[in-house]
View 1 (tube, rainbow, N blue to C red):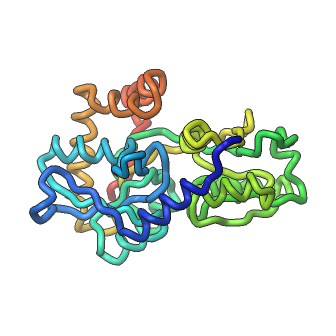
View 2: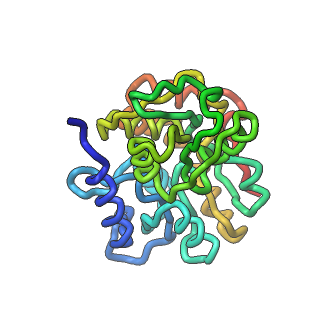
Length: 276
C-alpha cells in the first residue's frame, strides 16, 4: 500500500510550529540578514529524514553567502508568512521558489536575477480519467494560495468551466486530490514531480498541461535591501561560473536537469530579474 501524506503533514506542522531556523556558517553570532522561506516545497526547501533543513534554495543561498562573505539566519515560515515577514520588516529577503512575474513586481516585490526556470502543470490521481483541461467542466480543482499554480488555474477556469478550491500548503492540496475533494490540482512541475516520486503518491502529471513558466527569483520588499539583491546576483553569477550551481541542481534533480538549468544562463535575458 502506498504511503499516505500523514508523515509529510506532521513534519510540515512540526517545522512550522518550531519556527525552524537555519544559519549560515557561524550560528552563534549575529547574522547579517534574516531570510524567510517556505516550509514544504521539495526539492527547493524541505526537511530531510534526519530533520535537517535542505533543498536547492537552501544550498544555493549558502553557496552565494559564502561567495559574497555574508551570514544569515534562514527562517522557515511557510509561503504566506514568509511574504508577511518581509513586508513587515521582520525579514530582509525571501527565497522560496518565488516566480518572477509582472504582477508581483507591480505589487512591491523586488527580484534578483532568475536562478531556475519553472513551469506549472495540472496533476490528477493515478486512476483519474481526466486527460486534459476539457475534462474539467463543472468540476473542482485545487490550487495553493498565492502561487503561480493558482494563477495558472485562474487563467483557465472561465475557458474550461471549473471552480477552484484554495489550500494553504501543497500536502493538503495533494490529499484533497487523492481523497476526491478535488479532481485535479495545479502545481509547479518540478515540485510535483519530486513529491510524486519521493512521497510515493498515487498522483500523475497530466501530459500536455505544462505552461511556459517563469524563472524563480530571490525577493526583497524594501528598496533599502538593494545591497542584498546585488550580493545575491553577484554570488549567483560566480557559482554558475565555477560549476557550483550545476552541482547543486544535479544533487536534487539529476544531471540532465542540471545541464539544462546551467545552459539557461548562457542565453541572454533568460535569467534577468527586476531589481528596481
